[in-house]
Length: 315
Image (cartoon, rainbow, N blue to C red; front, side, top):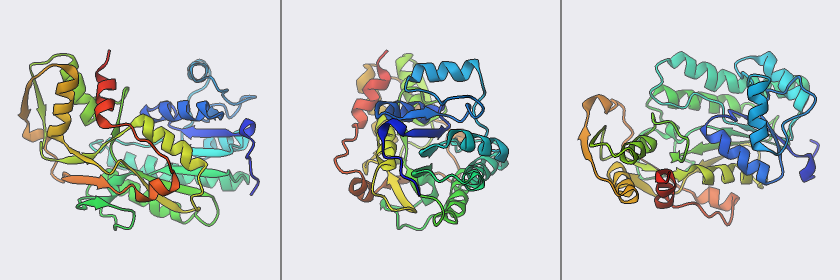
């Protein structure tokens, strides 16, 4: 495998670049000196430069983003860009997405296309980071480390676990690190997700809000922390085939999150439990062990959830 250690030569292909997480990963990589592309420039003369604003405008004005469900598009992108690093974020990530088949097609077959394209064009990047999900752990209790046997309870989690099993067949051919991110949030996340929904109601000074189970607990991180972790893992000593939890190790109940938003916004409202929002296979408590992550990314300084909420509430 050829090493591309020269910072000036580092070029990252980020699938899902214009999604919630991708925007922050792009910023973290650009700040570290990477050229960043989403694959839309497969037929162009040069990849996106280190100006994130220009990159976004260029994609809008010229080509559509890479469709990972097309093996041929993946081949063209890998062959033209020859990226030194790949960060694979593109996925259907909303648990309640109403088309289960879509989840498997994008999350499993789309990932396979990306890896198969590397093999087909004879290109081996220095590192490929693939984002799975901590949802694969299902209703595991306590602080969950990477040794816990996955037990998915919904199609999203099942599609991610199926993807993991498929990716494992490539561990001996490509330098892959697989992450299992727990919940994370920040500015720009869709209000379909829990924390942005809560924040938006308080910011708009609504009189009431409907939620599901108030006793569920989640391990929340800041999306900016997650982006820095992904960048660091690209450059870490993680062995090929490593699976890493991306988490804070500190669960917060829904009631605690509401209280943090209440304090940050200076507003209060009535909370009602809507039975329609209570999912049948709700994961009650999901918190991760960050021990392996801290070993692979020493000196990590995660952003506290209280600061994340304040940032999201600010105009």
